[in-house]
Length: 227
Length: 397
Image 1 (cartoon, rainbow over the protein chains, first blue to last red):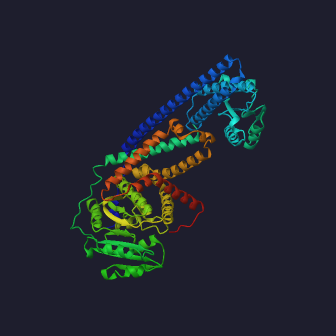
Image 2 (cartoon, rainbow over the protein chains, first blue to last red):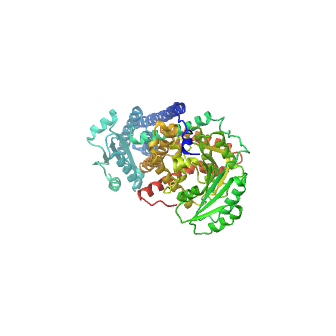
Image 3 (cartoon, rainbow over the protein chains, first blue to last red):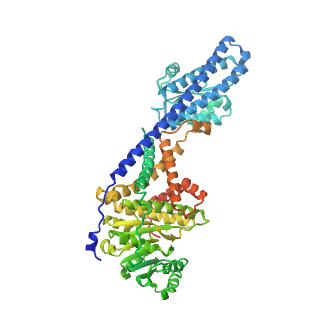
């Protein structure tokens, strides 16, 4: 047997185009269906968040109304504070969920985000009112203005605020309200205008204002010493 | 869409595509899968079996005993042991079989490729078997493999079903599953002339093919793959059998396994790089699909690693406030469902492959571990490959 003989034994190479094309069609279909199902799941999750926001918004409005009806009676302070603490807990959790949807799942809804900003605005104003009414209120308000689209320091600053809050001595009294200046929201615009916010991130802790990125340590000190 | 999202979509689509491709390949050739050419008992061409051996005193006796037990006329069979400068009693053990006609030669340690070439220079057979000294051939294997050459004279090499015996060692069991998966997919690849390796434990060649393509590459970490790629480059046919059985001894500890696999990965990717010019339609499915797939798969490993690192680094601090149930109810990344489909299809594939080997009973624990954790071992091989390449570490066995 020699090389000349083997030359006749070469394989005629083929390209199984049908395999690649079929695989592509089926894979693309599965892929598209999968992405679609994923988006539907996200859509449902977002609807659930929106419903929860509406429910809490309703509770905030009811509390505001009660406050007016009772003509700012400080006797109800313990009730107000306990109700507000519950609302704040739910509000914060919804905020985390919205961030998770937006940052980790890549799914956002401007309308839901706007509803959440309204909730934050209302909650803040209500909390402020209760703090004025109830003299012994130790709550510290942290207003965080950020922009998810055009601010490289904002994400880190957001994490720093949470870390600082969690390690602060008075952590149970710290209330964080985060406003996304990167979305079209009348309530955020109004707050930014009123508080003269011109850059992101800006953090207001009590009566102190911090522009730009602040370390976790400095934030914690500011939270612990806020009036 | 940012780079992380693009990477996620790329991995998800690639996973779905590859699994679907193999299913379609199986569906297309499902009738041919079990078909193997009939054995002609009267056809007994002269066969030379070359056994290169380096420090194999533990296994070589059993290997030779099994070889002598092959169902084939002894006068038509030549067994050549090339002792590659072993420092143990390999030569002594091998010489015990000289009285049964086994030829034993000793050379200065020069590597497996050189030992195989030494054997090729001595061999007189019309067909050449290359066999590792830590492997054991079943009596009917040779005839089963020769039948492929009888049926189709274009066949230049045939690979058997290389298996691992059941073991209580979990690592060995994981490799046993992997070997079964390889047997199955190699058979499928043979239908599109894309067999990428003639495995060292046992492979059979038409002797004339070496005259045409040359002997084994003596400076190669995986010379059994390099010779197969060279045969493919010359457009010769390599077939694969699922019935001709050969058993081999796998590494039984993590250190040896990593050492072996990093060598395979390193040598393998270098070989594919050496034959990258075959990525043209001229080489059919092998050039257009199989070689690129190896590069893409390697790249995919590092993309996945990057995505994992990115996910850890950028894990949101607020994540701790969200309980598991709300994470689950909070939906999924858009690519998670296609990845889930690919995952389900891989489970189906695994079950299908294992159920195809009815005599190979595999426990549920190794199957589950293989499915969920073997990937991390492969990632380890690839990291080892990169580390050693960056270090420009000298090739060694």
